[in-house]
Length: 156
Image (cartoon, rainbow, N blue to C red; front, side, top):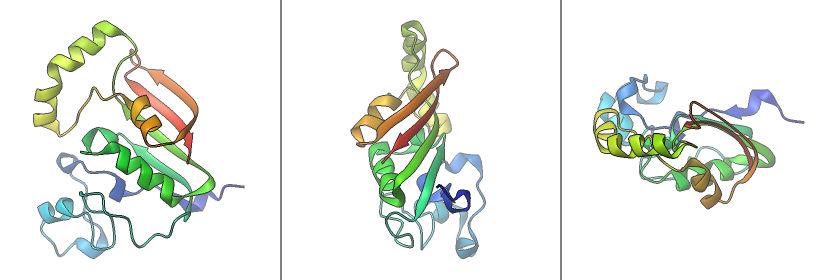
């Protein structure tokens, strides 16, 4: 049975400096920019270094909400999530990316560079391909907003 009190929603799996996240307790003494350069001395750096303070299989569930768009290597992020979740656990992703409608994808692709520059986010990523490349087993997928919003439940 999954223990809902052992759910990880790690800031360390998320890197969106423009959102204004508050530094963690351990990092309050650092400058805000350095907090995003390396999320936390005990967490995950932007270079994809492991969350050393958590042993493999430490969590029943790992949740990422709209974070894969901002990472240079979202596949590595999901592999890290798979390392942290128990073998019988789940990875829950609420993401945005490519649409299921071709005409909408064309619009997303045309504005992708400007959107990345302004918001730090690639809004046209192929989320299902990223999840598959990370080696996760997709249990369920729901999509909304012309297919650009994804709710994915996956197994490690």
